[in-house]
Length: 532
Image (cartoon, rainbow, N blue to C red; front, side, top):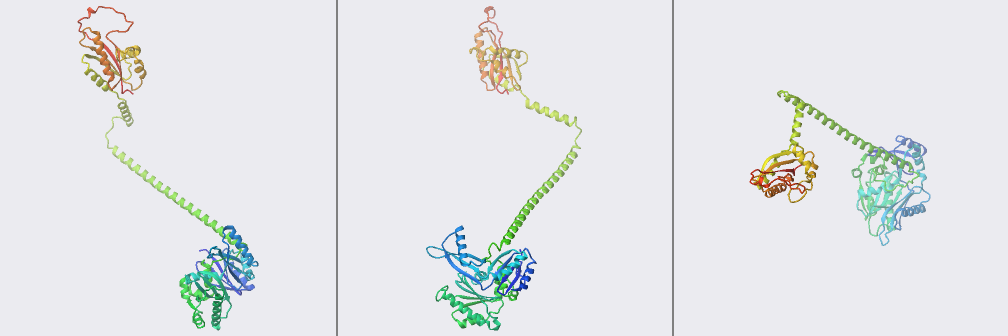
C-alpha cells in the first residue's frame, strides 16, 4: 500500500503519523517555529508521499442551506457564488450535497463548510510546500465522525457524538447519519475535575440543539461517548445524574479497536490517533476544503501515478503476450523435434524392412516408370465393346444382313475408312429416302481428335435375288436401327450395292443378274455416342 503522511492540526500543536496500511507512531510538534522546522524535517523522510491534514480547530463554520435544484455547470456556479458570499476571507472552504429537501420544489440541500482562520494552518502549509510533498487535502475533523456514527450507531435518527481530542472535547450532532453541527470545547483534564465540565458542556449542547429545533420536542438523542483512552468511563453516569431522561452509550477502547481495526495501545498513546486512523483508512475524507492552488502538486502526483500504473499495465500485458508466444514457440519446437524423431524412426523401420526384400529385377526408378505407364494405358484404354453390342442389337432385327468385316478405330484414318470418311460429304444420309446428307464429314472428320471412336461395317444382304429395291429397304432399316441405338451418335451409309445418284449412267442387262445368289454389298460408317 502507498505511504501516506497524516497530520492533525489544532490551535497549539500538530500530531503527525505515517500510514502504510496501519497507523504508525504519532509525533507531536508544537505550534512554534521549532515545531514547524521539526515537522518539515519529519516530512523530508518521505518527500514524495502525499500529506493529508485533519483540521481540529475552533475556528470552523458550517451552514446548511437549500438551493434551487440545478445540475452541471449551473450548480457549480451557484455553489461557488454562495461559498464566496459566506466565506470570502478564507481559501479553505467547500460544499457538499446533502440530498433533496422534502416538499413540492425538492430543492437541493448543501452543507457549506470553511475554516475561518486560515492563519492557523499557514506555517504548516508552508512547511509542506518547502518539503516538496504534495498536499492531498485539508479535512475537517467533525465530518470524520460520520464514519464513526455509521459504524457504531447505524440507523440512529438523532445522535450526539462525544469524542476527546488533544484540542479539547468535540461534540458533533448527526441526523439520520448526516452531519449537521459540531462544537469544540477547550476543557481541563478530566483527572483534575474536568468530567463535571464535560457534563456541563454536553447538557448545554443538548439544550442548544432543542432551541434550534434540530431535535423535535420530546425526542431524546443518543449520546454516544467515544472513549478512546478509557478516561470517560464515568461520564455517562454523571450525565444521568444531571439529566435522567438522556440516552447514552459508551464505546470502550476494546470495542473501538475491534470495530475499526486499530490497536488499543495506539488509541491510548495519543488522543488524535483515532481520527488519524479514520483519515488514513479513507473513512475520514468526507469533505476536502483546500482549493486547487494548494493541491496542484497532488494532482500532478496522481497523474504521474496514473502514468506509472498504465505503463505497468502495458508492461504486464506485453510480458504476458511475450510469455504466451514464447510458450507457443517452445511447444512448436518440441512438436517439431518429436516429428523429426518420429521421421527418423520410420526411416529406420523402412530401411530395416526393405533390407529383407529380395533383389528387384529393375531399379526403383524403372519400376516407377513402368507403373506410371501402366496407369496411363489403363486410364486411356478404349475397347470396341460398345460398338459390338450396338451392332448386335441392330442385327437381331435384320437377319438378312450378313456382316463380312468389321473395323474399329480411335481416329478413323486407317486405309479404306480414311478414304470413305474423306468422301462422305455428299453421300446418302442414315435413311436412303432423306436426300443428300447433312455432312458426315462434319459429324465424323470434324470431330477427329483424341478419344474419338469410329466403327466401320462391311456387310451384304443375303439371300439376294436381284431385287435392289428390297435390298436398299433392308439396308435403310438396318442403318436406322443402328443410328437409334443409345451407344451410337451417328450412322452413315458409306457405300451402297447400287449407285442411285442422279448423274450415274445406266449400263448392263438385268437378265444377267436375275436369279443370282450373290449378296448386295454395302458399307456403313459409325460414330459412337460415348466418344470423348
